[in-house]
Image (tube, rainbow, N blue to C red; front, side):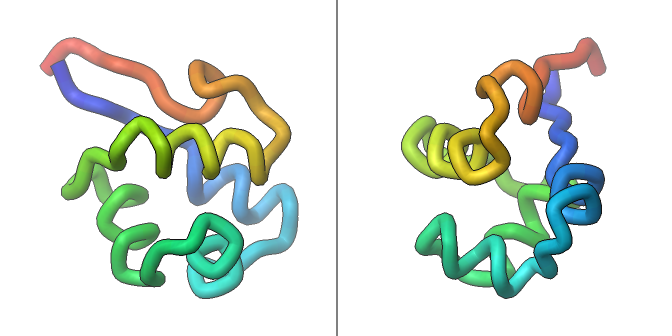
Length: 67
């Protein structure tokens, strides 16, 4: 299973760049970039923070898919 996300789509919707989202989530811009590309799986805390920033449920931001 791989973790997919809608970060790029949600950032565009809400007008955030990676740096702005990173500051709100208290992570580095590089972390946001890696999550978006599927190269990093965020901790539950980071995932929940990101979902809260976008006012979405965790399942609306992140989903598991078969490889």
